Structure formats: structure tokens, C-alpha cells
Image (cartoon, rainbow, N blue to C red; front, side):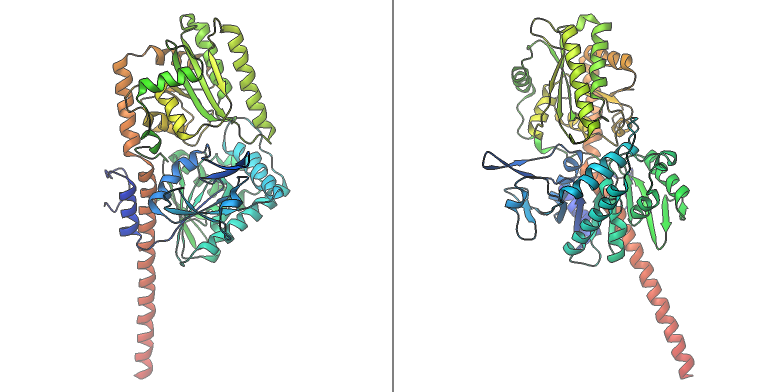
Length: 526
């Protein structure tokens, strides 16, 4: 196993190689994960408990890592039957049927959830970090709940830790304060925080009334990861502007007080090979099934989009692009359908309800204008789909559209590539998604340029088969090599080097103290 992370690594990253990193580089390390979203949700439906996998890129990425590493995953209990399946301490062995790690559920009151999650996290930080022209809302009462919930999760970390120096993986913008809170009580812990969404420039970040607290909290981390170097640079500039700290730009570190934090890009990815692919039918059978299920004629080409109903995803703009395609290239009328799967999310917030209503209205208008003889250019399905069903959709598609207005990474793009073991299909990808830095063989588009996006759809539908396959082969090589185990392995290798360096420094200090004491004794005895 190479000791130095970076571009030179060419390991076949897998669950086994990830476990090898832990065994050889972090022997005996205790692993704890903290996230808002839980990997498994239990709901009560018609008197029966049902299991749901959430539509979450974070869960898609982290769950295979936890299956490989083991440990404890601390998360907010969001299901109506979550309480019924855990023990007295809120513990549940997962995955169901073949447990490899423990889920620890945390319950939040409605007041806590309104302030911490819907309020500060999703009406404040989410629009602040995504450039989609939604004004962030900051309320003192929401901030108070955010602080309190971060403290509650920090208390859970301390309660679950069995050693003085665990490896703690803190996930996303819900827990910006938690690293510092844990550091104060577990000073020897290795805290790796990964920020899954973009980080804005200092001018934008300066809007937040509690910007210094956010920065100070994150700088309790040993390692702070982002998807892209651009987001790292924005963070360094924000810390430089709003905090008293020492920044080493050559090594990308920030020292605030006694803690030095490494700030580095770690582009997140997906499991390879994906578990959802193992039970899939051949591509031809998937196409027949999907066309039949959604009432799409067999000879109609299929474009798909899969995401949550979030205003950052650009779903309405995607529908306008279909309208532009049919306007400019009427030869596609009756010959192509966009199947859009969108899981409703955060419907208590007006911005999300408005985004869904706008998308539904645009789809209806485009269908009314162009639909004929049982054919509709857009089929919009507003419900959650499990990973297996999503992979079936991807395998059935001629092209996949990812037109995010702003996105940290967007794992849907990588899942589409992973699903295509037939090496066919075209990816139309927004330049404002982090995935566009890696999936360069996709057709990269500006989602604000509707006409250009329509032309990209035309190019995808018209692309020769050999070109489609060559592009897909290159993207599959990239996703396969830079998979989720590579993502986690790089961070853990960096963490191992930091722990070793710290041990060397502590030993050197101890030797120096011992030498001084020996010198003083010689003077006294002499």
C-alpha cells in the first residue's frame, strides 16, 4: 500500500484495500461518522414497518465506506418507526441482514428541527453556498437551535468514543460547529470534516452573521475537505479575511490557536462496482421495462433526469431546454421523451415548493404545446425511487441530463456512468457541477443558456455510436479508478501521516524534557 496519497496512487481501491489502510496505517483506530441524514430509514405504513434508503448523495457515498471500515454512524432519526427498531441507547446494527457497522440514532424535537435543519442549515447556509439567486435567511432563533443541536451531536460523539484518539468523519454544513466542540473534549482525536456543498467567496460568505463562529468551528478539524480546489481557495480566503490565523498557502494549512488544519480537495465518488448493478437485467430488457412502465413507445429515444426537487438542480431549465430542442429541431417531435424522476424534499420551505410548482407548470406547458397522439415530450414523476430502480432507468436511457445550477459534486452523473456497463449512452452535464472537472467526456453545458442546452441534447441524440462508446469508456475508467474507496483512502492516509507526525513531535518533546531533567540532576549532584 503506497504511503503517500495523490495522483501517483494506482491501487485497485476496494473495500479490502480500504480496510488495509486502516489496519496498516491506522492500527486499532476507532471510526465514528456524524451526519444529519441516516443511511436507513424505518417508517410505519399501514401498520407495517418499511425500510427506505434515502435519496441522498452523502448516503450513497458514505455507506459503502462504513460497510468496509465498520464503526459507528451517528445520525438524525427521521423515520416514523425508527424508535421501534433500536435498542435503549438508540443503536441498530446495519446493513439489514448482514451488519458490519452500528447506526446510532439521535432524536430531535420539532423545535430543534425547525431551527437547526429547516432554518439555519437550509434557509441560511444552503442558499448562501449555492449561487442560484435565492436570498439566504438568517434568524437568531435558528442559530441558537443550530448551536444546541451541534452540541447534542458532539455529546453523542463523546459518549460513543471508546478511545482518546478516534478517527471522526464529520459530514457537511449541518455540523460546522461540531469539530471545535469535539476538539475541546477529545484533543487527541483525528477529525476529518468533509463539506459536501460549494464554499462561496469571502464577499458572499460575509453575509452570514456568525461567519467567525462557523470558520472557527470548522478549524477544529484536523483535515477539512472540499470537492474542488476552487472551493478550498475560497475557504482559505474567507479564513484570511475574517479570522486571526496563520495560513501556509504552499502546504494549504491554517493554524487557528493550537490546531493546524489541512485544507485539501477530495472529489467524492461512488462505490465501484456499484451494488445496485449486480442484480440488473441486460440493457435491452431494462429499456423494454422502463418504456412499458411509463407508457413510452418502444421507438422513442429516452432522456432521463434523476434528483430531488431542489431549486439548485435546474429541473425547470432542463424542461425549457427540451422546448428549445423541439422548437429548433422539430424533427425530434414524437421521437424523444425526457423522463424526469424528482423526489419531493424540504416541502416545508417555500423555495422548494415553488421550485416543484414551477417545474410542474413548465412540463405541463411544454407537453400541451408539443404533445400529440399519445406522445409527451416530458414525463414527470414526483416520487422517490430506490437505487435499483434508478440504475434500471439509467441503463434504459439514451442520454442522462444533469443540469445543476450549482452543485458540489453531483453523484447522479457518476451513477449514470457506472450503470452503463454496455459502454453506451451520453451524459449532458452542467459546468457548475463539481463532476464536470472529472467527467470531461460528457457534453458540458451552461444550464443558464437554454438554447445551447437544447443544442447539446440534439448533439447527444445525433452522436455516432462509436463516439458515444469512446466517451463512456473514458468516463468509466475515471469513475472506476477514482471511486469512493479512493476518496476515503486518501483522507485516511493523510490522517495517518498527521497522527504519525504528531507522535514524532510528542516523542521529541518528551525526549527534550527528559534530557533537561537529566541535566538538572547532574548539576545538583555535582
